Amino acid sequence: MTTNIVELKSVGKSFRSADGSDRAVLAGVDFALKEGEIVALLGQSGSGKSTMLRIMAGLIGADQGQVLYHGLPLFGSARGIRMVFQSFALFPWLTVQKNVELGLEAQGVPSEERELRAEKVIDLIGLSGFEGALPRELSGGMRQRVGIARALVMEPEILLMDEAFSALDVLTGERLREDILELWESGQIPTKAMLVVSHNIEEAVMMADRVLIFSSNPGRIRAELPIALARPRNADSQEVRALIDEVYGLMTAGSARPGRTTEKEAKLQLGDRLPEADIARIEGILELLVDEPYRGQADLPKLGEETELTDRELLDVSITLALLGFAQLAHGDITITPLGEQYVAASNPERQTIFGQQLLENVPLVAYICHGLEQDRSGDLPEDLFLRLLRFTLNAEDAESALRVAIEWGRYGNLFEYNFNAGIIHLPKDETPVPE
Image 1 (cartoon, rainbow, N blue to C red):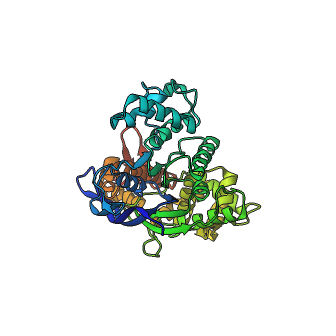
Image 2 (image 1 turned 90 degrees about the horizontal axis):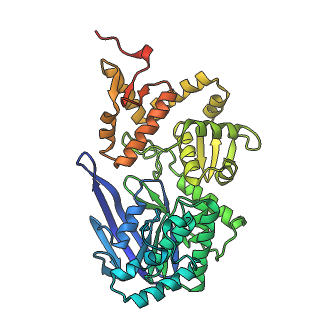
Image 3 (image 1 turned 60 degrees about the vertical axis):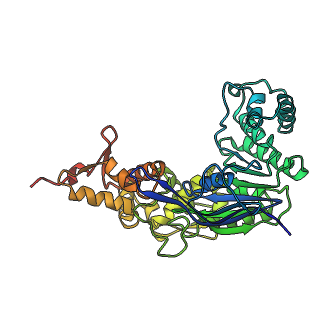
């Protein structure tokens, strides 16, 4: 019988927004990490994945529900759980050896034992000969190996990896991932389970025994895909490509509003996070879709390979196209709509008009900005007014991102203009209301 090492039962977490209100980041999260498995967690930025990892690590507490470690409530950090972060988080004035020894030193491990254990894991992770190097002397991949070595030297039962490979180039990240899997499969590390947060769908399928899809606002697990393929896996095999396609389908379900599945939920709300898709990419994907070899429909993984967009970038563009009615998403495929075809065939001014109309119909934040400008006698409003509104439902970073995207889209649709220096949004000059 497989043992649950960590369990989350109806876990919820809220944070205080900049305006003083509470914002739910997680709600009703139920999850069990079992001995002998690797689980990958996928979801949109800001969905609460990293928060979930920090709760599991005992770095922050849950506001609702229970966190159990070997069946007992977890209070504070557990010695058997270690976390690897996206940022390398190394002390720049310490050598590789000293950075790796840091956790052992904090636990009061004698210096001779610290040195031996650190040397062993440094060799294991492929950094022999660099013990005396400072972080600035290392490449990005080597710095992340130091971060992983610092976690492994603690002999963790559970390894939590928060986008540990995302700051690396593709080849370096792939090599490091393969090395971690080799250590896992060979039993050279005592780790009994891993939870990996990622934005890379192929990475998740190549590593995991289960892939979980996280929804947003608030974060919760909404789908699970078990993977029974033996490791190592061939990224080009039919089985792996089919699984990647299936994950794309799960990620884009309820595509107008990521993480929502019913028609009502799929509509954007005023305080929702907006996908980060710029106009050039939006138009570029549409133009690709109407040409050979796609003829209006494309498999998202294949489209990602041709465009060389990351999974995050491709999903954001695809979700935007669905949101605006230019495309439909289903089962990991994207299909251009008649409106999308009309858009591609249009002149630049006609495109901007169509784009603006679709924004007003489908993006409440843009429509709200336009309404506010039309109601104001001067025809201009400070961006801070809308940032304060967004901070009721989004954290500061996501609020700024949503407003930045809305401004870019609205400007392209000739709905309003923006003064970067003053931070003022205003109606186009010929549409500014005349004072009575």
